[in-house]
Amino acid sequence: YSGDPSASGISSSGPSTSDQAALLPFPDLVLSSRLFAITAWNPMAENQTPEANHSANSALSADLQTLSSPAPIAIWNSFGFSKDWREDGFVVVFKEEDQEKGREVMVELGKKYRQGGIFEYKAEQQPCTLTRFTVGVLMKSVDAETSIVRCSKPDMKTANVNLDEHLSTSTKESAHAADNNTAIEKPQADT
Image 1 (cartoon, rainbow, N blue to C red):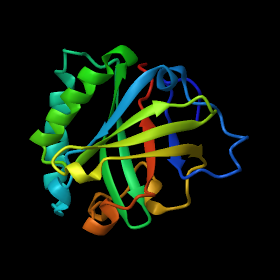
Image 2: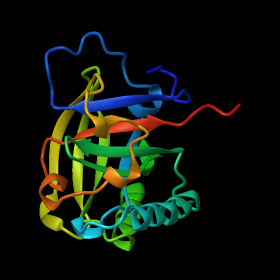
Image 3: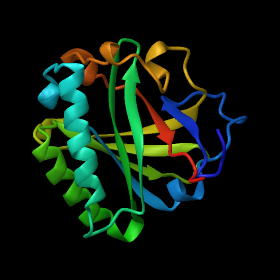
Image 4: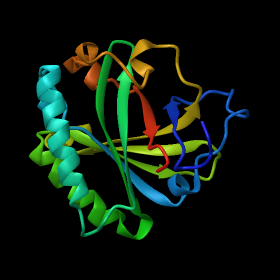
């Protein structure tokens, strides 16, 4: 991973551990903004075919590109995963002063794509630490707040950026697991 937000790389996060000292800090973009994670995969935790999930995510991507009030300052591909589950999606970054309106826009997109919830991330004072807020969209009882700490990429097939699409399905049980990991694929710099 590079500290340059325009560089290609992976940022993994998970429950706090004491072995965080060797990790690079988050890029300034992450530290000074409000991030939202959203997907169009498996609406209301109902498994869909990989083709249906990719089609829905393509439509969501097109919607994200048209946001203007407020306009995101960055959008990149992302995915949430655990040992036997993965869903691809996007991280959408808004200026800190646009967080409330950004949250409203993201919740509306979550409704459009029938998602139970979305994630909101806020940087904390501790290095390599974010607060993750689960924001209920169609499932209001999922609201939660937890601290997550940057960690090394887990040795799991589902943590690989280029995972075989046919293995990318969800189960209701793992979709609601409280300690899922989140990996963020950073966009590649324009050449």
